[in-house]
Image 1 (cartoon, protein in one colour):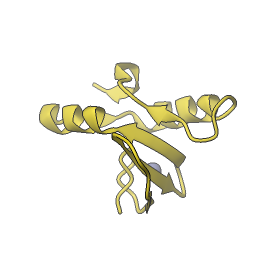
Image 2 (image 1 turned 180 degrees about the vertical axis):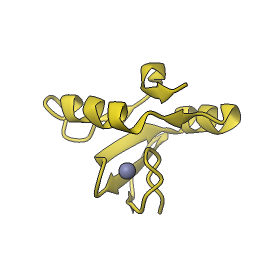
Image 3 (image 1 turned 120 degrees about the horizontal axis):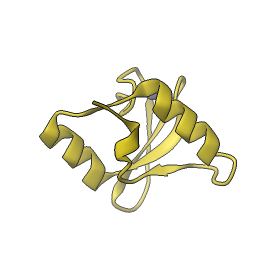
Length: 77
Ligand SMILES: [Zn+2]
């Protein structure tokens, strides 16, 4: 499976609910909302990889598996 952030190789984790869960050796373990993935594909947007990894690292202080919902600040424009 492909990492939704850096497009490298990542494991897909089976999960329930409206999101995809990935474990990437570089970005770590995270969930991303299906709605956000669809928006990204429709608009041809990609994440700012460095910024997203920083954001995930901060979220992990509070949450074991951060969930990326709709975080426009993380997009590379
Ligand atoms: Zn990654």
